[in-house]
Structure formats: structure tokens, C-alpha cells
Image 1 (tube, rainbow, N blue to C red):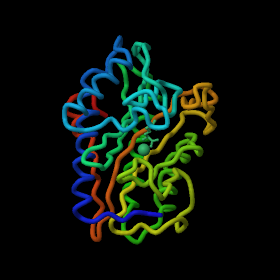
Image 2 (cartoon, rainbow, N blue to C red):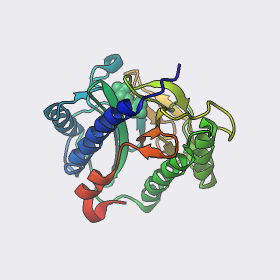
Image 3 (tube, rainbow, N blue to C red):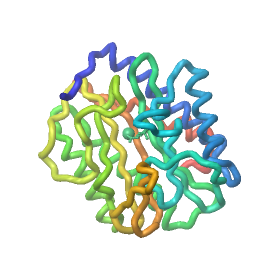
Length: 260
Ligand code: MF3
Ligand code: CO
């Protein structure tokens, strides 16, 4: 069942999306060598609560943090911990804020200090893959058009496109129908309709597409232990336009000339 949102609901979605964007912007100020991921998690949780939101990941299916932490070979759903970020790491931070009963979901992969050029390119290319996916997300198009745009952009460059995890619909629940895979064919899948709100979130590996879930039942890593990147936006499909509800502008402001 795909829930189509009214214009009023989309305005509420926009508020939740802005809160999650601002939260990532706050976290971005603190991402640096020596900072523990648990500290980043506490900053995000306090920021959401201080702004009237609820950290939607915390307790979701037993998840123990506000942030999903994705260091180097972690693809998604890593736990915040006392691990201190190191120069040369990349760290994906994925989180969901609930505000007024609606959810906003966004992820961004940060470079910590000086990161090797191939991995920096993976970050740029994964971000561009998200933009290519968003460009296909229009009323009347099919989900497969988004999937194919992400997959073809990344596989052309020799990256592994993760199959096990997908983007998704979003609204009163953080995960709603439809699934939005990062691989697929044009012209297949559900038709995008005005009122649909979806998350597009390419998870792209420098090496093979294969992943392994750890013994905690959550932490998803690349099988070959090569790095993985992850960017995500929440968007709303309207009649004549698609509105990207989340933004990386707050991250850009925090990172200054380190923003890629
Ligand atoms: N954006 C992530 C996802 O769609 C958020 C997960 S929160 C968690 O899977 F609690 F499930 F980890
Ligand atoms: Co998501």
C-alpha cells in the first residue's frame, strides 16, 4: 500500500526533512579525527530533541542509536560506539528525525582528514548517482527509472552496487512502500504519483557488491572490506515538480571548503 500525501502532509514532511538536514549539519561540525561516533550520536540526539523532534532510529527494531554509523567498509546500520574517527577514514551518517508524526531521512558520507583519492572519487560519484536518481523521480515515471540511473552510473565506473538494501517510501513510518532499489531496469516497478514521498539512497562499494551482516544482526559491511559510500535524500513527488525535502546545504555551511 503506497500512501499518497496531501499538500498539507507534504508541508509537515518538509519540516521533518529540514530537521534531519539541520541535524546532519550540526553533526558535520564535529566530524574530525579523534571524535568518537558515540559523541556524534549524542550531539544528534540532543539536537533533534531540542528542536521538538524524535530520533526515529533509536529503538527502531532494537537499533541502539540516533545515528547509523558507517565507517570505511561499513555499508549501513553500524552502531555508534567508542571508536574514535581516524585521519583517512570515511564515515557515512544516516539518520531519521520524526517531527509532528512525519519522518525525514537523510545520509551523508564524510571524509575524515586526508582520504585517498580513489575513495574521494567514490564519494563524489555516489553523490552524483543520487543526483542522477533524483533527476528520474518525476510523476508518471517508474521506480525502475531511478534504479537504472543509479546502477548504470555506478557500474560504468566499476563500482559494486549493493543489492540487499534499498531506498523506500516514507511518511508517518520511516519505511513505507514502495521499495526503491539502486539497481533495475527502466520502465519496471511502480509508477510515481503526485503525493508519493520516497527516499533514494545509493549504497556504492569501491570493490564488489557483496555484503555481510555482522553478528549484531545489523552492521552491514562489504565482503571484501573495501570502502562503501552512502548518500540519501527524502523527496516528494508533486504534479509538476519533484521537491527534494532534505538538503546538504547545512553540511555545506559546516564544512566550508572541505565540502565536496
Ligand atoms: N535510512 C536508514 C534506512 O532507511 C535508517 C535506518 S534507521 C534504523 O534503513 F534504525 F533502522 F537503523
Ligand atoms: Co532511508
